[in-house]
Image 1 (cartoon, helix red, strand yellow):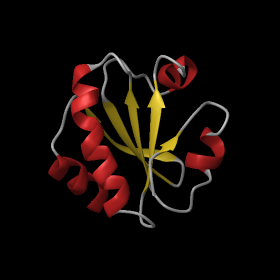
Image 2 (cartoon, one colour):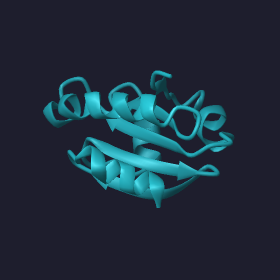
Image 3 (cartoon, helix red, strand yellow):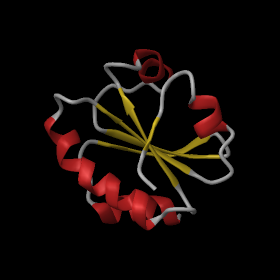
Image 4 (cartoon, one colour):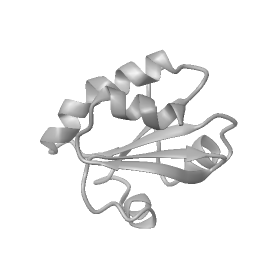
Length: 104
């Protein structure tokens, strides 16, 4: 399953009401580290299909969500379980870091 585009409008349904954990990547098209992270996020979406939903929030399009979750630098990846933030990684990280975060 490909990543889900998350917006302020669908955040409640896609993240808060999700019955599986949701990994959300806050990114922007002009961000170099975000571009480097994109293939890793794609791989995670495929490998954890059915176990973890993977979503992306474009911070330029979704300023309200960025403010709500205090996104001060990108990429920022947040893991939500039962609609609540349980972990966060800021900046470029390796795939293993995300796997560790998911498996905790």
